[in-house]
Image 1 (cartoon, rainbow, N blue to C red):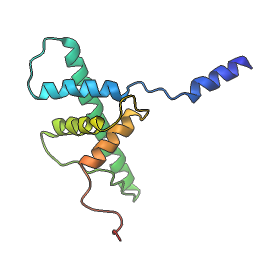
Image 2: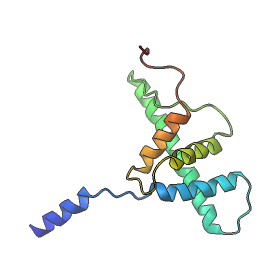
Image 3: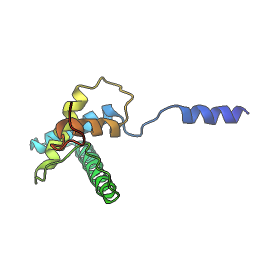
Length: 132
């Protein structure tokens, strides 16, 4: 019975493998990378790559979800990314701006933080329902 409660406690706590605070640091490193600031620390390169890859992967995952939802007649319309060649730096800046408005040590997952950032920065022009 003791092990059952230990397992229940383990699954009841919310653990995130990648926190918003870590993402903030990584995305600041990515912004330095995009600003062509030289840095000889290889750890900073890894941090910037982690932010860029996470945000781009999130956007790609959403694009796949949107495509599949449209195949069954559903329009997600959470955010609409422009078709631009320099989109990656804009995505990182969007996430950083949102993280700057989020309290430190937030319990929100990085997925929710990125989704919220992209929804605010890249709203869809077409609405699903007319506003009253």
